[in-house]
Amino acid sequence: MPPELDRLLDWSTLAHEPGSYVDAALTDSHSDLLFSVATADRAHAGERVAIYLLCEHQSSEDRHLLLRTLGYQVRIWERFLRDHPAGPLPAIISLVVCHVPGGWAEPRSFHELVAPLPATHPGLARLVPQFSVLVEDLSHLTDDELHAISIDAFARVALWFLRDGRDPGRLVAGLDGWITALAAVLQADDGMYAFLQLVRYASLVLSDEDFEVFRGTLSRRLPETEDDMASHYETTLQRGRAEGRAEGRAEGRAEGRAEMLRRLLALKFSTIDPTYHARIETASSDQLDRYAERVLSAATIADVFEP
View 1 (cartoon, rainbow, N blue to C red):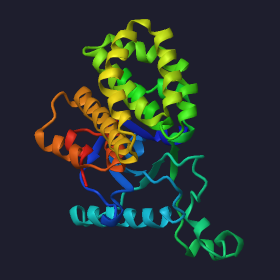
View 2 (cartoon, one colour):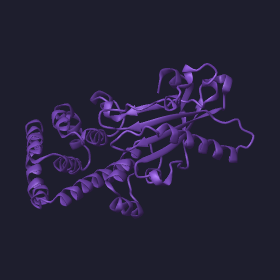
View 3 (tube, one colour):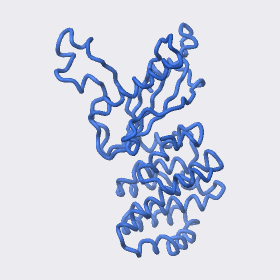
View 4 (cartoon, one colour):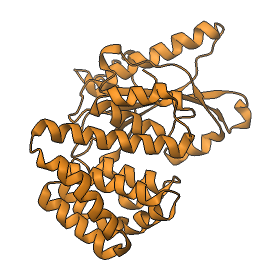
């Protein structure tokens, strides 16, 4: 959040609000969460601001995302009026989370979608709806910013994998900066199991050559893992690779994402209802990525799996 907004809001009052506002046809590529938070301004005590979090999961940019976001804001206000017919409407801060390769380069304000550009014609701008969105671009988060997030070491490493999994070269090159976090994963309960799940995921997104470099670095920096990695590689990873089929590799990647999601859920919520295990088993790769991103902000496990 920009500093001026951060000062405006009392984050100790942050609360998750129920509901989803994304079009049904877009749920595979977008997910959303709605929060409310009280203002810290005593002059407006008791007033709450809505924070609309829209997660974009596409590998390409969406030029008309702001048009859809305007529609989602209208739905939020309509729902609010059903419960509070006297109003006034709450302010809505819209935050778009994306990990488009190369970063977000599309419009961030609604007027940028309109021609002629309202600001260039006197009298027009005030007659055309205008709002801007905040964009949290995961592809531009630095390692230091990921390390600074107050979550479990496994979850931080998992976020790094999600950020760099589409760029194997970056994943391999960045490993040295994550050795301390991986060592912390090993120190946790069932640490070796969690560590091997991360190694397995790396083996599925990297080429054979890149994975050997990745594994070699782990062996040098964390020598206590070598025997377990070798055994795991021989009994599980190498057998899966021997199939040599593109379908098998795609399935393997999905299995790696599913296992990582299970681990994240277990770390945050302790137990996982069989219903959610079934949802994970039948989820697409995009859905698994979306569920994993939701874990960070979800108040309950049900929030992770909302439509």
